[in-house]
Length: 498
Ligand code: GDP
Ligand code: ZN
Picture (cartoon, protein in one colour):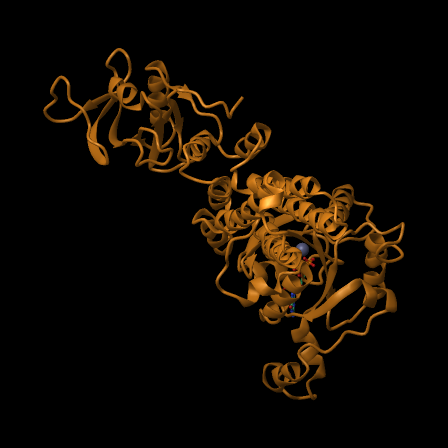
């Protein structure tokens, strides 16, 4: 099992395996220094019995058991407890590209190290008390962050946010438990329990849990992001909108209807939320095989997406062709048996610049007074049939062409995803993850039962049972009380070398 603490010295390449000019191999454990010295020859004058000092960098070569030179390296020694794992740690900084690092790693294994399992360095940091469990999880989140806001949130967690909040609640529970248990043991000598005060204390802990749980939605958005499918008939400007929104030229934009055949993906940050845009082929009945596959893909993408954005031509308004596409995705409306879309939806009326032109008085240049007309009713509603009106939470008018309406689109998407507060506040704080939220909910439930036992005037033993359950669940968040399976589950999700 991963979590059995052993005396092995572990070793792994800890830098990314793709191109890069430096690769780092980390050794951790009681034999880190002797194992490293079997594979390291310092440059310059070399004395028998030489020993590296802690927190200094040495230049030299890495060698295998037959003294073949494997690479020119820098050696960095960090002796216990001033290291990531709190054990003796030695790092080899090799040339990048994978070959050198691979050879040095093999030499270290030959010299007596064991390949590290995913998350094993961080697991040791946790087992050695350098990080609590919530902090350890933040390490993995920080490495996997896709936006600056997600990184900020993970960093706040790494600096102790979740763990500190929860250990405060645990302390409060422990105080209560001590008071109840004292009554169990020496009932006669102590004044009776102040029940209203006890209720107040329970409610205060519950309020703290609720506050922590309120961060869960933001946390899940920051970690997992949103999958957004862009659907609509050919030529309404889906690919152009994706390009304008992501500021890239990833999607192929052409004037021939039906050329975006595959599902294209683009990543962007919307108010700190990592968003994956899926530009689907124009949905329509087709006899062309490739195109039909594209249509099926876009239906699948719409079905799997967290949010669907349907694009129509804002100058033309809602057409019969749009109604047909609507039916192919939403059937008889959200929640109906024929509906393929599970998430909420936005309507985008694109090509708003053309509507402005059409509205301009005859003879006036489109880029003159036409623009003024557009701004006077920029987000005018689009006449829609009732069913569509009920389906789309909001309609946003955009011009992919002029890059207009994109902020309104950001706001509409965040509002729909339940993250307006993320967009508003620049500073992102820690947020609980799903595992932590689940434990917090269990703790909250146990405190509810405790309140009920108190209200029903049940014997004190019942109270302590519920309080202990609450404590146990809180302990799972910080890792103070945690089953080995939970640790295995947490750390096996880490990447190799972390
Ligand atoms: P898709 O088939 O829905 O992906 O549509 P495209 O993005 O390929 O665009 C189809 C055509 O409409 C292209 O000629 C675009 O230049 C044009 N187009 C896209 N968005 C706009 C817009 O906002 N305004 C105007 N005037 N033309 C646009
Ligand atoms: Zn397209």
